[in-house]
Length: 463
Image: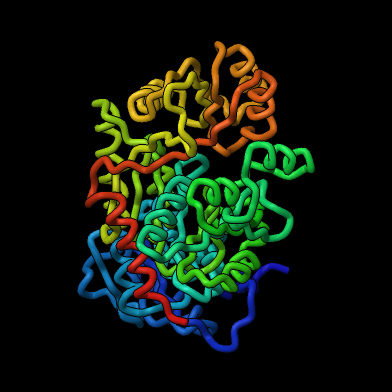
């Protein structure tokens, strides 16, 4: 049965029951006649506590802003996003209802508005869409820093491990809680002091059916701190995993004596628990529209420190870096920004030895990485492969490499099930390799900014 004649229809009901009307801000524009907007607000007020409106932009049907009377207070600003931000600040709503339309707002603008609302923990709803803030309950029993990213292979694990080493160096080693698409069936605590992370042991783990290069194993090996591994499947537009065991992993970490948690995201997925501070890793090659537009802005808005990773010295990269920095600062002006590069660091000496170096780094970076190894670690890199995540090419690369003494490989992707057995078959020793974070500009050195972010988390923590 359709709506009764003369009866105004409205947004679909909330997917949850509320015991009282929600504090609501409506988004309006000057392309609707004010009497129409006022009538809609009056109808809406029968179900919600409409406390104000935000005017996203003027238009042909708004003759004089001074005469605008919608029956509720109205805030204005220079643009749509600033108007919503002012509405969130002034009215502290629980719900934002979007009554605007083109040409004042388009689909891209709407998703940026949704990101603003979600970052404030407020539901954002329109005539045929709704976005709920991803649930992030307070589970951690100690201060926590989330390390999130704009996608896969941005450098989250390297950043999380580096932060953990820095904190440990100050006498406060953290527990890292990681989630991954190949994580253990149940949360697994790995203490590198007693857990065998040797190549032989990891191969045995792989042969048992486990993903032996899971992020928490890499974290434990590279950072030398206790880690908890969890799994997740799927991910939403605002970073919520469709399924995860992360909450149980944090509860396991709560039982440890360490006084800080580092919560590591997976791909675009954000740890589904509250974090006291957040670091977001964005590669310099990232698509600006996806990073700062649509709902990508949500990740930046959550962040206290934004790490622009994989920065190089070329002119082209300098231009990309400047564009990306302007973009992220425009979205999150209050966040600190660090520019970084990653450099390989063997976890055992390789001096004087012939090395085959295998990584997930882009092909264009391999010569730089190899040169760094030869200069800083006194080895001879006889071959490289950037196919660590591509099993068939990886096996071909190792099988076709010149004679070498050592396979130097990151503990990622196909490292254990393909690279290590192939190297052992050729009589090579296996040495695992970490990616160390090196500062390359921004608001200060990465070490300083990372530790300041950990201090920020400690200051914000409430038991």
